[in-house]
Amino acid sequence: MTKATANLLYSKEHEWVLQLEGNKVRVGITSYAQKALGDIVFVETPEVDDEVTADDTMGTIESVKAVSELFSPVSGTVVSVNEVLEDAPETINENPYDVGWLVEVEVSNTEYLELLLNEDEYQAFISEGEE
Image 1 (cartoon, rainbow, N blue to C red):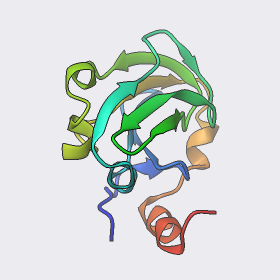
Image 2: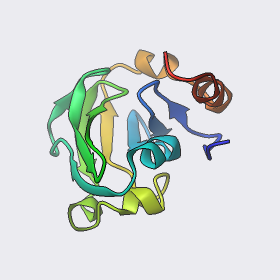
Image 3: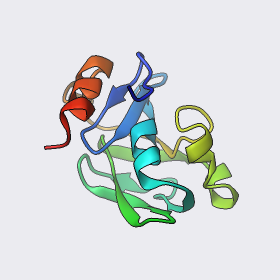
Image 4: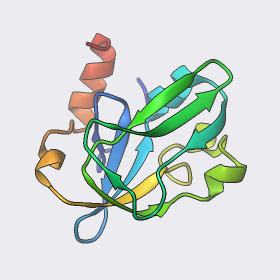
């Protein structure tokens, strides 16, 4: 079973969401996603003050295998970007749920959070295979 964390929410695009104070959330990719990608060599994220829209592309992640799009699981304004990834994108492979996070977003519509999967639902989703 792929490692996940009980206090996170998950998208079917394999992003995780951690609710922070107020309407802020932290977003990253799951362990399942980083394993599927392989060694990550470059990450392109939105910049602070950029608007992101749920289910739309917010950047790319490049591994030795392929370039994949990053999808935003929420809508809102980017308030912080993980600058560690600029020089050390492999941090995502090493620890995707802690220091390997991507962005923090001030969510404009919290209803999107209700559409995300909890840990059990996400584990069932990856066990069954993607739709």
